[in-house]
Image (cartoon, rainbow, N blue to C red; front, side, top):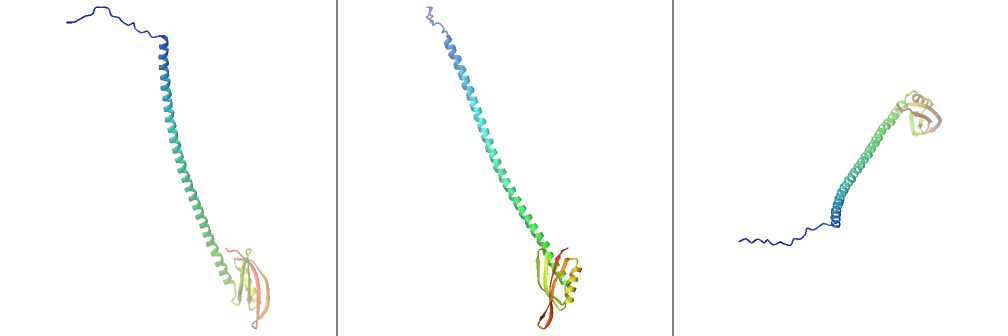
Length: 182
């Protein structure tokens, strides 16, 4: 059987939310919202800091790579300059090599058989020669041959002197000229 209680029961009156409780609830909700906002802002700043740190590391790596490339370029430039200088020296040596050969060739063509060269020196662009000849005419012929050459300029006979050498009369001479080196 079913029993039904018809007696009135004591009911508790519904609880009334007071004004202070409402304010505390609102404060907790607002505070939790502020804390949630601050946490979101903190984590967003942390992610930005991480991104900037990664960017900085990448930029430093790029700077280091470019420094290495710059050093390599400088090394290549220095090597190129060294090679260019060496090529210039080689070309200058080739030019200078032809000059003395041409000078001696022209001298051998201009010198008569009876004239000897004792010394030849270059000073200040001028070539000084001392030598001996059997006659004064041979010396004059040698000077005329030098003047007639297109490779020599400003040919001057500085002095001639006669001496006896082993019973023969010999003429010592000194002359000066400039080699044009066409």
